[in-house]
Amino acid sequence: MITRQRLAVGVCALLAALTVGTAFPAGAVADETADRPAPKVDLVLDVSGSMRARDIDGKSRMAAAKQAFNEVLDVTPEDVQLGIRTLGANYPGDNRKTGCKDTAQLYPVGPLDRTEAKTAVATLAPTGWTPIGPALLKAADDLEGGDGSRRIVLISDGEDTCAPLDPCEVAREIAAKGIGLTIDTLGLVPNAKLSRQLSCIAEATGGTYTSVEHTDELTDKVNQLVDRAADPVVTPVAVDGADACAKAPTLKSGLYTDREEFGQHRYYRVDVEPGQELRASVSVAADRQVARDYGVSLRAFTVHGREIVRGEAAGSGRTDVMSTGLRYPKAESDEDDAPAEAVCLQVANSFSAAAGVKTTPGLPLELTVDVVDGPDGASDVASFGLGRGWWLLGALVLTGFLAGLLWGWISRWRFAVWRTN
Image (tube, rainbow, N blue to C red; front, top):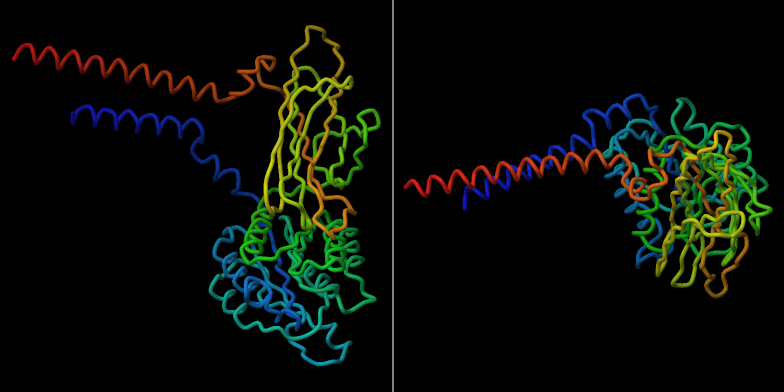
């Protein structure tokens, strides 16, 4: 019995070693990130007087923000250079001109010292005005230099109080500089005016707006955005989907942003050559309160309306983003000059607005399109599904065969010994 257990353990260890060695070649992960420029993130926190309100899980908005920041700092990736900027944290007076200059760098953007950053956050107390526009301008300066991705994450519970410096225009100005800086916004109050302003700021730079009402939602979203900053930089391209395939814009490989109204269908077209593979995914963000039970679908059609493949996702309850995707390998053609196939992509959602929530503008969506050379035997669905996994499957089959021979040999040897004795 002991011999069998040891043999089983040995075979499992061998299988695991082969699996890891095949799926993750040595040094592959390290080589992939070794030369990547350091991503930068500036967390911009509203510390105005209204952050005293106690309406987030029974505690103040400021306490919820501090808790979220501490949890985010604990798990920030080592390669991310992170900083913290405040607005409305230092001037408690009534002088509007002075209050609208009240933005300061609490922790400089750079390699993260978690203890030092947490100590800085602990000193914050709700104080003054809400100069969002000036804070965004300064935050853009905080992120200057380097070739890595740059991201501002703005967390606020109120509208800017320092017009005519419109923060939406500030965001457009930052985007117009072409420096690849994205601004994501999070609203701590389900307020229509605040939502419009923060949505406009995010939309101007290809970022996202999310309304959060609980501490764990705030923590999860900030974590998601910090992690996203570590991804390779891809600047989304704004595109207007059509209401029918015949009028749809033709897209090439890339990342695209659009808006989709509740229950609406949006169409896009992609040309796929014989032997190529289309990979597409879509994410639709619930940037406002929505009713329970919803879904998102991404479907590929021929221009004649025949469905090729689809991807679907469904949920129930409040969520930030719903995503799905599909893959379509176009078979090789015997004709040398075979034309490309026009594939129609249809994005649909079954979100519905909660009572009193405006349905315009539409929900933000991100569409990723990638047209690549297809795997050998792309017309074979099984081959397509496994892709390079055939190598792993072959290794596992070979290992199983050898293990079976070894076990058979040991069994025969033990039986021979038993008969001899």
